[in-house]
Length: 431
Image (tube, rainbow, N blue to C red; front, side, top):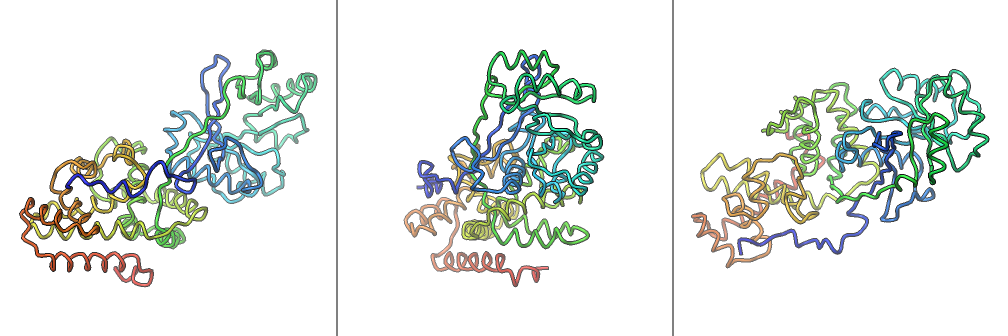
């Protein structure tokens, strides 16, 4: 009875596209066939192909940025190599690139980009910020000196150009000091020609097709997006308010812990509070991270019902811990309750949390191991399911002398607290 696992409320075999996120990556090689970088590509389904009619270039770019950082983790999908991401005109002008770290990303300009004064100004600013700029699908068109000066890497399209055309325009590009990337190389002959021309980088089916990646979607409550959007618009980030928003959303908490773990000053320490993590990040990093989360929200708003379930469990576990009189278990009990909803999307806590460090006692409880936090969670599960026999056994095991009427009162208070937390009108009054 105590080993009951509420992961079974969603069968992994019944997953559909709405619970999964997709990306594809294609490696870019050096001449010695070592990986130099990866191009990250938008995918919306299991089909390993871009469907241009289904999404705009801007939406595709936004999705790739948000999913690669927030859901997959950029270092995990690129193994520490740089990531090339396609940018259309509209996205270049949104300043969304400044959500990225220049040392980890290369801005790849789509061939459809029109070099207006605004676009050129945006590219100059990106260059000044430290970004490398790549030009996609180059077929030999004339580029003005000011535009050519902005480009670091030129990707030569081997499918849309002939051998004679490439031989004609490549020498000028080399004299201009550009790094040449031979893309869409499909044969050994293509590769040999590209090397003879002076190309330093190589990408195409000869080496590797794009590799599909998928991951369970991390659902963030839509109310959290609303609250974060308000904070983003403020001239100064209020760390206390942001901490409050994150603290009541398990998925936001997970993403923050994931983010903090990648920071150079993290040093592997367990974070004791959300506010501590935010202070470590600093206001600029917090604002950037919040904007990335918000992009995901704009692209895909989700229901609050799941987070409500997590909050009810969190408050119920917290109240059960209070009943024991052991104050050191109160905060971990709350975390155990709210983190339990993450297991809907995964078989085990190891899959849900990966290498994000959470206290061992909480992780053990979520894995079904017998400890006091697991007992609180199982008591909550039993109450949810109306399993009164199981509930009585657990009460006897934990030494909690609670009547069913009192448990009902605790549960109703938990429901009320969760609803109050999610109520938009009451939220700001909590301060």
